[in-house]
Image: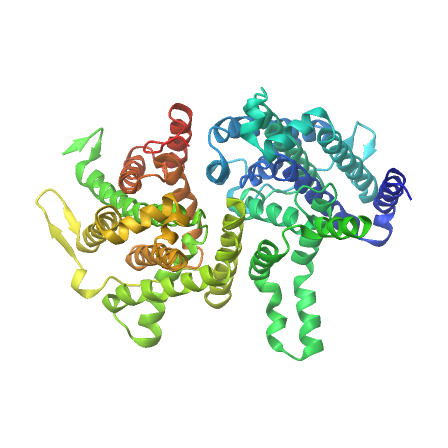
Length: 327
Length: 294
């Protein structure tokens, strides 16, 4: 079968899965998965297609979550305006952070994004409206466009699905556009791209802002779904987590980050149960405490991925099938 | 005596605390710079190694009744060995790849080490008391100088300058600098570069552990004590640039002092001042204070 046909069938199946999923899976959990999947896709736009490793993406997720949560709870903004505001805020801090970070290359870029997101973390910790350690609680779901009641889990689910598909569509469009090709040229060889006459820094800043805006959209949607925002989302460990999601799924693959996000969120939520099951099956008591040691397992997956699984799940799959296909 | 309505003694004591923090920044950023020079790896695990230095010191006293002074030697050695094992088993496979994989690997290692210690000791701090011979304070006439803090500053300055001397003025240091410039050529001269790389990583990490031992009586000894510190140290490295050893030392100390002053005059900004300075430096002098634009 031809590739476009295969792709069409594949995407149709995927959307079908998205539409039917809440019948089998608890909708709120599924929505959380979608938010993190969008977050990881936005992150992948930088690392996978431009070769920029940001270690500060938690700033967009958490920052947008706080801002839109505050606007929806205390200023009575409608959900759609709240999410728009979160997206705009994500874009704004990405613009500030990006303008500073693109002044240095490579590993320095990463350290700058990490440091600036830590600065924002301290700001949220000290600001009064964020509720400090307790978090911003009790964000109402409200009425979408004035008539869709989001307190119904299914209505909210399909809203979130539409938001996710919109974000995914934007990313898909970006990487297949001429703009996306310049980004890939920057990733492959920055010096040569400059010598070809492209203003590399402008491209970098633009893609950074786009990535920050979409990550902000994910954060704002997440606060609408869960009804609260905590400091965890703005912490550097969340920045690390999104790196891991993308790495596990496959850097620079379209679907990798989604798969990776599903895998990591499932792992974080179900680790206790998995541990109990293993300890019952093997009789080793140590596994029963697996739930408390999520970070150890996350760290271990990181190390394994970096050492021997750098293509990630989707990347590995593509690599194997393409070898089989070629003569 | 008062300055802007704040007692001079309060300012001086914050200044000293700033110097103490600054010496930790200096030692950690120095270790990062030495490792980056030869390995091209930004060692995220540096904070975890600092924590391990403090933790091992606490464990030595609690389980084996080993004194502070014994641990001051033993802890860096132990952590240095752990570092060399990490380099030999994991890091050495990544040198041919993009720098970011080294950062990601050491990030994973950090999560594992912190997770293991947290599983055993919980997140709350353990206290470690100041060794008897350094208890108390000396009256300088205008302020009381806590002996232990003075010792931390003196000891770390000594270690920093000793490192500077070895790297800049000895034959061993010449090999190291040559290895930073062109490892293949140095290897052709018969120097065992892989061994040198392993030892360098071990040394850099031991430096972090030494700082950890010094920090044990100053801060609470806790599994997460290193991870917030390392991000500030990254900012220090961005400000100073990693090209110069002396630059790392001076930037570390200077920023510690500025942080100390901020605590006196505008405490709200004390946790963010280093990041603000980083942003300013990036805006006006993108290559960093001591850096060379590559």
